[in-house]
Image (cartoon, rainbow, N blue to C red):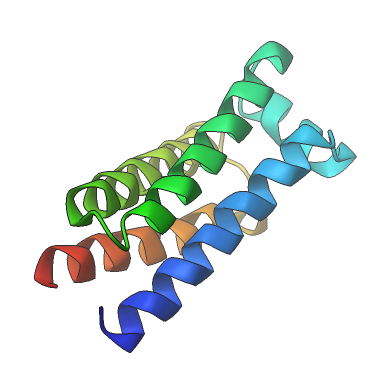
Length: 116
């Protein structure tokens, strides 16, 4: 594994886990944002669990490259869905920008995982 992949995969894992924690803790701003894009409250813990599973897949992907690739792809698609959701409801740029950045990192991790 090269250093860039380790750093970006770690950053992606921390971002996804942090996002999951805010969902599990039902942080007011996150709950408002999720409601604004049309996410039903019952689905929010499921989304948090998917983020945690993605992070676990990245960690296990250190030893099992196919799992690392799959996890990075899934996280990229997950955050692409978040970006599209914000675009569809015409959210403020500041609301969708974090998801866009995390998606970009996930795409970079996917690319680097494939190359290793």
